[in-house]
Length: 253
Length: 189
Image (cartoon, rainbow over all chains, first blue to last red; front, side, top):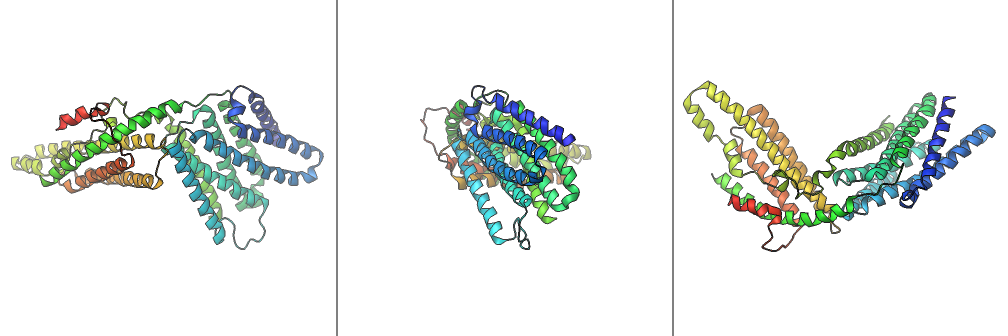
């Protein structure tokens, strides 16, 4: 009963997001996000229908749609990367290097066979695959968020809610899936409630942040910063010469 | 359990990153314009090395011990410790302002060099580590006689400035007053 109530609330919140996407600016600037939300909304309605009418095929429908959702999630990550870093080519370049490095590390780990998948496990369960793909997304988003934090990239209200919502979703999914994989059926009941409840939190964050379109404001400031920094860099080098001579004098004294 | 631990750590790491970016939101403007800060520190006022030599040297201490008063010695050490800790804070704040200015420019630079960025980050991290050590040693031992360590901190700071300077070589007009900073330089000379 409780899980069905959560389900209905989730569908309602997703429907609100989809309806508000037609407000000026939202759909145009965040097409992948709204594509993802539309997909999740359709997926939930389909699952509800199958659950009620054909419960015997529910697991197949669940996992098939779950994997499609993973690919839509990649689009969402791309949108976060593109929207946040396009005004900052330097930070974008660092993010690209960092993501490339992470992909190489993950591929090497997988190739060596001591990574995610134990070598004695011939067939992977669908849960394992979902957990691993979510983990890759988690690491990628953590790298992106680190770049935002390091370079103080101002995200704006819309993008901030996207990052926060999807971050909570990925982090809790990975932890839940890992614990579920480890503990097994004993965790199933808690998992069935925990995962959708956390998803409601994510939807609330998205609804609050994406209520209306708010443009990012960093572009003009950035141009001023570049000009200012060149001056600062020059004067820093001048001061460096002074510092050197003063340190030398201090040491000799 | 080690397999699950990797995923749990990954999830927690992402949550920590999110917390950091959302708790740090208020300071987003901290280096949005590094030249416009009202405080001297954000404009890059390097502490005078002569000051560090005096603070961490033992000339003053020798003079105080000649006086032979335990009360004065205690008071001297207490005040000197406060001053030394304040000096460390100033140096750290200076490096922080510099690295902030660097990041503010680097994030928008199309010519950014990844390896230089790594070098800057390592130089900054090692400088901060040194400041932490210096801070701990001052707390435990007091500042007198720490001249060598203080000099090392100065040279780390110098290294940081050098790397940043290499990254953004600029040629400006001679009559440029560099956002009012040359005036301060003349004052030092």
